[in-house]
Image 1 (spheres, one colour):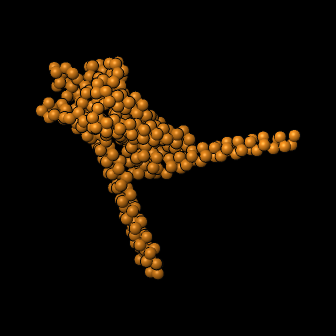
Image 2 (image 1 turned 180 degrees about the vertical axis):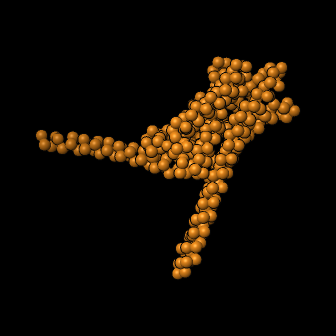
Image 3 (image 1 turned 90 degrees about the vertical axis):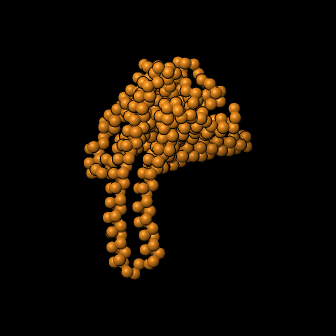
Amino acid sequence: MNSWDAGLAGLLVGTMGVSLLSNALVLLCLLHSADIRRQAPALFTLNLTCGNLLCTVLNMPLTLAGVVAQRQPAGDRLCRLAAFLDTFLATNSMLSMAALSIDRWVAVVFPLSYRAKMRLRDAALMVAYTWLHALAFPAAALALSWLGFHQLYASCTLCSRRPDERLRFAVFTGAFHALSFLLSFVVLCCTYLKVLKVARFHCKRIDVITMQTLVLLVDIHPSVRERCLEEQKRRRQRATKKISTFIGTFLVCFAPYVITRLVELSSSVPIGSHWGVLSKCLAYSKAASDPFVYSLLRHQYRKSCKEILNRILHRRSLHSSGLTGDSHSQNILPVSE
């Protein structure tokens, strides 16, 4: 194993560790906080988190073994199962992000009727659709025997070894990425750009009120005026940064792998094995970044994490104080005798 393979293996190990811990923490927050569970986006987050954990526990270790061993890491049946899950979980993850963007669009554009438009039942129906949509392509690939170990990506995924099926497999691969990656990307762009438009409109209204107030307050201290203007600037940039993060992480993680899969269909363009594995690692890194992008940096999840940490520390302090009290009583008992 050369230095490139060692670096890719280290990247996979780091991605697995971060993904496992962060997604497990999101699950703990969902279990701990009833307020989070009552909201419709919790179903999308739960669906996304469970998919990320399955990918981390099942697919990433097999890819790591493939990188280290430079060959198929398991038997044909297990590899086909892993390839089925890889295709299903990737599609489910993309569609879950699209569902979260639709939820944000409804919340921002229709704030007064949000609870009526996005109920838990509606969210459950959307999750059911993502499952059916995500199951369609791996089921078809399994029926056509297009699941197995792909040496270029050192992982069990979509592949076809028969030259006479090259055209059919190319059409299938193109349709799969169009109805998973491209569809989700279009939904993300349409919904979040609409959200950004509404956010900027509200920022302008707040800016007008702030400027009118600053004009009326003639005796206001210059430092207070500067702080108000800085807050105006931060308010305008906040929505842009969040939306850029949502769309940017989606593109950075998934686009290299999808483009590589499409370019691979053309035999005239050679692709290095290290780039193939790296693009797969970038796709896996979405499982590690999702908990921070969609959950852990939000106020409710931070509050839930603090409550969980305080409860753990409180139990430890009670346990340690109990041990101290027991040892103290044991030390006093012989003296009283």
